[in-house]
Image (cartoon, rainbow, N blue to C red):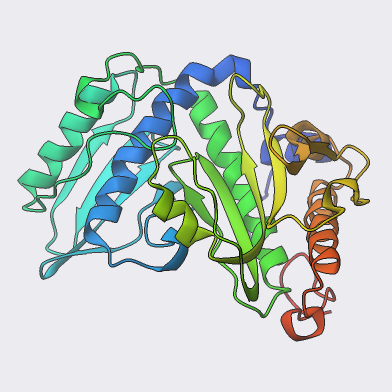
Length: 325
């Protein structure tokens, strides 16, 4: 009997494939375009989904092939929109059996917007969304945005692969907490994947001030004390991908807290801890290095703010597969 034989890969090749290089300068135009495309798709979900606390109803989720809205109700129908970064397609599929496919290729945001709205109309899934992006400056309405048009398929796929591994490790980290905690989800406004833990106590009113985002949204999002962690691909001000962790409100002494690993640092400008993605990507054990960062930054926030850790935590005796040892 002949058995299928899996090809043997060198451990270094497997590690680099799982955590690929993502230099910001090499794909920043694609990142800017993809950011706007995800905003358009996210706003479809926002327009049709009942409000959930802390804007959890607007997010996208990582899948085995890309990102998804998850099922969205439309009258008596249900549909979902998926980014497929393997075959490079946008898929719109409904429970009525209809489907439309939009190839992901270099095209303007205006063209992407028009194609998606047409696809929804053809499937009788008409929706009106806010036509301007959030959390960016300057703002160009989607229908008029012919500035952003880049799509490098290889780097779009690399970005998704980073999200895929981050999602996996974040879910292991999330499993240790039995208090209120967000899903691991992708915020299209800020273009990052995040998970947020809550102490259960009310927080001071947030000052707002997020570009092109109503203050009331930020104030509701931070209505209670949080320790939040995420991955962000960078921008012109911080031109490298990073993992981050912040607390709101930041307790006294948080900026001076000892955190792991040694590559982690405090950003005075952003008021949060950062860990360069490359420090994780090139580590002997990337999962453990990232978990060290997540755990130590959370512990710093929770200890300094005197969270009731005994009531909120399940313990750290979980393996990286999520099973108890």
